Length: 218
Ligand code: DX5
Ligand code: ZN
Image 1 (cartoon, helix red, strand yellow):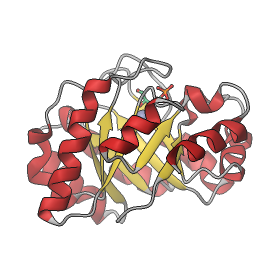
Image 2 (tube, protein in one colour; image 1 turned 45 degrees about the vertical axis):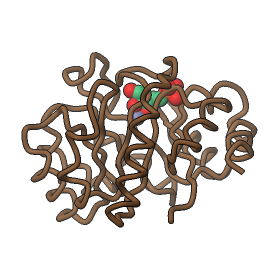
Image 3 (spheres, rainbow, N blue to C red; image 1 turned 90 degrees about the vertical axis):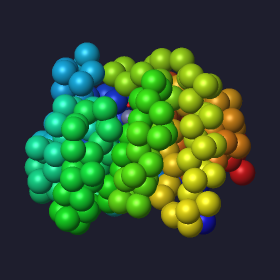
């Protein structure tokens, strides 16, 4: 099965120094770089778009794990593919065509991932689990870094881990929102494999914080 991966989010990086911060994350042993794209419609906040992915691509060999919090994400697949993204996570709540959108991501040569918000049930994605390399379970309501972890979402992580085993699938399960040195332990116990952390990683020494998260997974 899957190895455990740490995916720091650059939403908490210094927006004037993405190149420096991405290099720091890679040097500190990050597995994926989590890139939060927000359009001001699907979520209230606006972050940045495909051009920022293009700008940081040369700075790292890490997998660029792009989390699209945008309406109708199918419209942006080719832009992110051309920018050098490796993986696209799209919300089931953001499109009427989740199946086709995931097919489009794979057809573009990228890893595909489907995301569910805290209020969305696992049953809403059961028909596309064969089309994804990862499922992202939000553990906060998307839009902002630094929010409090919602433990009730872990029930869905457990449910997905069971379905994965029962159906013989091998998608990764990622958690995102409020992950720190304490909540990461509960996430892992529930069956998550990929752990996004933004404010925890960037609050203080990046390398020390990533090392602490890694120790909690050991
Ligand atoms: C929230 C984003 C998260 C965010 C996590 O909308 O999807 O990736 O950066 O930040 P923390 O770890 O601070 O909750
Ligand atoms: Zn995210």
